[in-house]
Length: 361
Image (cartoon, rainbow, N blue to C red; front, side, top):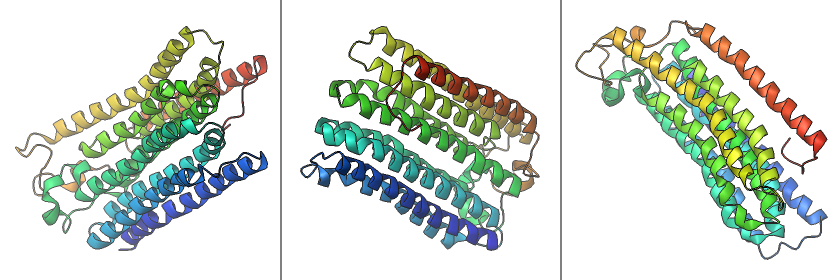
């Protein structure tokens, strides 16, 4: 029961802490506008929508906490803990990312009110990740990730995932969501900066923001498919998100300049697709892992919804927090470090050659 209660606390408290950090950054954005003597009295009520978007992750976290609290039993402790951490940590990351994005978006919208619609669209893309987390947490509670979805009433009293599978489930989703939040907020902040001078470009540069949100969909797919949660997917999506946030945000500012060549936009999209292929590689690895694991269990006639009498929990989960895929995960981690270091070095060299405007970095 203690582990299950920790899941309830995580789902309820982490989003509140994240919203506190986000509200602090939004206040810094309003303070910056006030120091610049920009009149925002007409649009200040519209900018308060940022507070609504920061409250949504808290709302999702409280919903998750109430659901988890209602089904905690002696045999669902690890499952409840995994669901609570997925919902709580992801919603906290979304709230923090919303705050940092709002800090950059408020001065831009204050100077150019036409950016308000673009700001709301970017916030919707970011907030969707919190909704994905709630769905993934509910799928985890139902046992969908272990092939037990439609037998919830019987299984929640008799079966629980192992601690190893719970760790893998949490890391797979949370790392993927954090990468998506970082890339979406970095690209969104860069889009707001160039929109002050040229607001018609905002919708055109919305593509990198939506591409980053796909990483959350990858994590949601693996949460639904039995045995598909993977450390490799989490590391790949996190690395791709960091690289896309660093590379693409600087490319947006360069391509959005008034005298920028037209082919820079195409080059930016090609670079973003190349980086996103790294996250897609993680998804492929996770799906291959799931297909192999499900094939070893054999065809029971129930497909993905086998009751515990057919698929024992021990067959569906790893026996420890560090499964046999640690070696591939270590290789991906080293590759991730190389990719992130290359992104930072490239950005520093570009700033030395041609200084860029202030960004989230």
